[in-house]
Image (tube, rainbow, N blue to C red; front, top):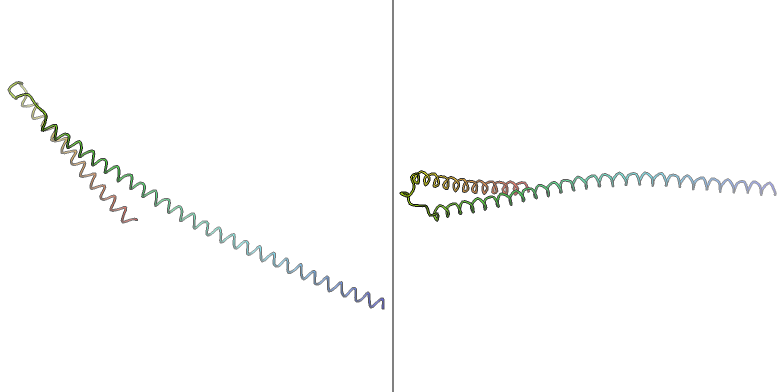
Length: 148
């Protein structure tokens, strides 16, 4: 009877031991699977993070280009307004300036011709700058709407 008890005890210990070994083996397998799953999740997160950073970089680049186009457009608009304003003042000065009579000065006709020519050239250049700035502004706005 004692040997039967010893045999039963050793049999139970063997079963318990094999059951514990099986549990440890399952725990190790589960741990390995969870590490693999964790590694896959980390790789997926890294891939998504890289994609997000690339998209964010592209978005920032696009916003920077739009800001640049807006600033250049504002500058050209202001340049056109300033050129038209200067041209208008120059034409008003040409019309409103009171010059002494031609007979009062020895070189009055030459001075008058030079003064009139310089007023005409300045007004013409200002109007030309205004039109060029307006055309450039239109082209920049057209190109920015084509890209966006």
